[in-house]
Image 1 (spheres, rainbow, N blue to C red):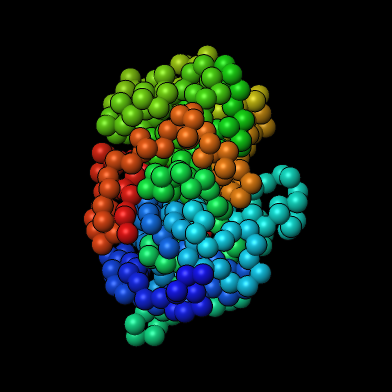
Image 2: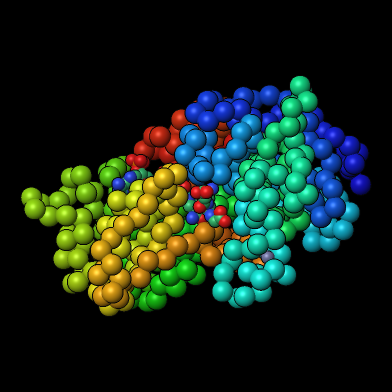
Length: 381
Ligand SMILES: NC(=O)C1=CN([C@@H]2O[C@H](COP(=O)(O)OP(=O)(O)OC[C@H]3O[C@@H](n4cnc5c(N)ncnc54)[C@H](OP(=O)(O)O)[C@@H]3O)[C@@H](O)[C@H]2O)C=CC1
Ligand SMILES: N[C@@H](CCC(=O)N[C@@H](CSC=O)C(=O)NCC(=O)O)C(=O)O
Ligand SMILES: [Zn+2]
Ligand SMILES: [Zn+2]
């Protein structure tokens, strides 16, 4: 039993008090876990583009003040009553896509989305409707995506955490909490890319490059990365791309990115993936699909008020628009397999860690995201 069990803990966290404002690195109080809750000592967290999106104020679910962060790993400090899936000392990854194994979604066998805690998660509270965080003035602080990994200690629902092999390095596998799993899973689960398929990936960030490595693992014949930043070219080839197209530089007069891709692949792609969150790119990605069967997978998160559009004829003629959350991966039952793939050298993770910073440099970590030389910044507590 830990000496802190059952007691509030004072620790460092980064509080998002208002959209568009830097995070405030300060001391907060983290209450003990209630029934079916787990308190985790976070050792490492990375910053995902989605954290920046919510902090910017573009997220319709964004509620402040809150503690952001959802790509984190750590060690269980204590558990509340009725928790039997993890125990004190377990090494864990927080899951923004819960898996309860009991709800209609989990039992359907058709989706990795779980209905057990999603409604309260979207409101920034624990399943009982309250928060476990407050600042030193006693003001409550909201949770985020059921994870809130930008705090040295966090409390999550027991369905939102998975124990992992303790030999896996937490400062690397924290990336399996979102970006790497999302892209890799989108290729191998949502799209289920097969040997010989042609694939185009729009946006060569951590998510897009993870799609690339999933497509490569499935032996896709052509993996074309489309990105507006030439600095992403080398990484694209390193992760398995066969071609790189920069639509700002590589198009002839009269050519569009759609016509270029259709021409490169004799009629269009078997699979395309949007990993940008830009709705115009989503349209291009759909329209670059092969007539009759091409599927376009939307992964990117678009700002509030944005909508996708295309001519319905694109769908009438057999192209399919799909979405993917957390790569279609069921976190509690499938994370162990991804960790094994990583440990056996089949899944690249370390290569995404381009920047490492102490936790108190978190605001500089958000700045890193805007630079072409950054895939992921990992923060150490
Ligand atoms: N559905 C899900 O489960 C998840 C969704 N996401 C979402 O996925 C998206 C990608 O995340 P992440 O990889 O972390 O983000 P990044 O910002 O690292 O990657 C996005 C990439 O797209 C490039 N890009 C921007 N605009 C265009 C364009 N018009 N055409 C081609 N490329 C473009 C960016 O270039 P530049 O660097 O020059 O801006 C960057 O290289 C985000 O929208 C994120 O919110 C993330 C995780 C899970
Ligand atoms: N809150 C946003 C929705 C954001 C979103 O689509 N999130 C992705 C994960 S992004 C991770 O970095 C997701 O999994 N969505 C499924 C879900 O249940 O949230 C909004 O309201 O637009
Ligand atoms: Zn994310
Ligand atoms: Zn469920």
